[in-house]
Length: 379
Length: 253
Ligand code: SF4
Ligand code: SF4
Image 1: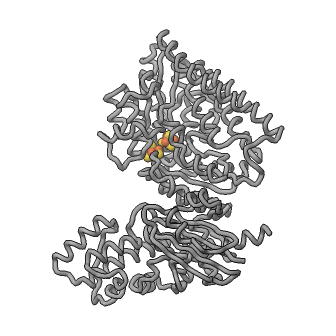
Image 2: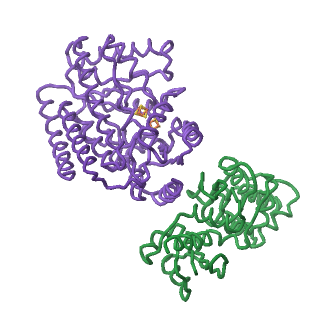
Image 3: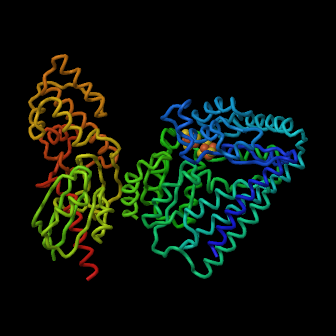
């Protein structure tokens, strides 16, 4: 059953590329995003297709290094590399890129990217105190609204924004429902499967299609739980992965953890549970968007208490046996924040903790493996 | 019961035989270019009821010999507790890597940190530097202790340290003092890892570099903690593997 579903996922993903082309031919616009802070609702409200573009593969990094320094986060290099080599269909489809001033590396990279495509950069505050940061952030979002209206030549009305919020709230709720199936002990899915599902359902031209598919997968998983079908036993160590975003191609740590006999059941990162928030549908939509997006608990924020709170909640709810904190090489914000995460995991929960710093290449696989195996020996 | 432990590192392979709780035999060879061939050669003729493999070659060995594996972290922790019951901190500096392990009262690993990305701060670093200065690696530590003053070597990367040494020699600095500077570079690195991972109590020092008297003395001064060294410190990982193999076998019987 599972196999069929993965086949279907693959087919739908391939079909989706064609779908996007059809939409484009009809004159619809495509907007590419690199970061969770950009409120995609506004693009959806303008009838545009939104695509997450974050680079997760090693292949284009060499080309990126012709212009970017080598000792830079691989996610940034990969993202830029796909753009310069024109090897990502989703980047090619995009009429415009919406970027944010998150970490230093990323925001400076976007300056280079703007030679390739129109890039609109949101000036993201680095502090989440609404008294200080909400007003300027809301202005940025208003500006984005105008920019998107100009691009698509459509008026983005309050009603349309509210509809978009409802749609994306539903998408996020469904994603949460899907990710929550691994709360079952043992989990019906491997972490690698979950990564693949989340990755491939991210690019749908038609959001509803993605929502339906995720619901279908979640339903199947609930059946598997019912039937006690799982690749694992109740003894399998349950690992939470926190830190930088991952995706297909940058999932080697998940792979090694699962090859070593554990199960990654929870992802506290931008590709996982950080996407499960809800935008308040009762409030003025622009205000609600501004508030909710500013509250995303990424390490570029200082302080970043939200991540600690989210972790606390997840460690308990997913019955976690150990936490792995992943940092991409040269990512200072996540690297430094690891100190707080270690304290939380070891002192408040008494759980084994492992901090890993690596990149997208395979060169350190054995070094990672020995650390991961030793970490699992501690669980 | 007779149990064996084999530690297949990237520079050398050690094998230890235990008969019940006592260490009976130790063997050692270079890893060379054929770790599995060398490992097979090393255990030739040995009789044992059970064997565990550890070190970088452990998984290859497992495939070939149907042996269970454990990481060098767990093996070193077990070895240290055997030689020094109650041990709670292990510093291991081998040919190609170094690590600090923190244990709880019952000998369980609760934290560790490893450096295995480059030769800096390892046995390999000292070997190359001894050669550059024309010392034998066996007396390198003694030479370092003869130095009359401190000389600071700031580069920890083997490649950069080599050129730093070349320029110090050219400046006519005393070779013993340069040797001491190089030893201190390794000591400082180990000390900072110790402070991060396990800042208190006696330290069990294992791995080939624990045979270097210069490192041992300078480390003792630097961290001001008791340093305990097993009789054959380079055998600690293999000994731990043998003990864990025996414990598992007993449990299963
Ligand atoms: S980790 Fe932070 S900067 Fe990176 S995509 Fe997520 S929110 Fe954006
Ligand atoms: S992983 Fe870190 S360095 Fe890389 S883009 Fe995200 S915040 Fe920036």
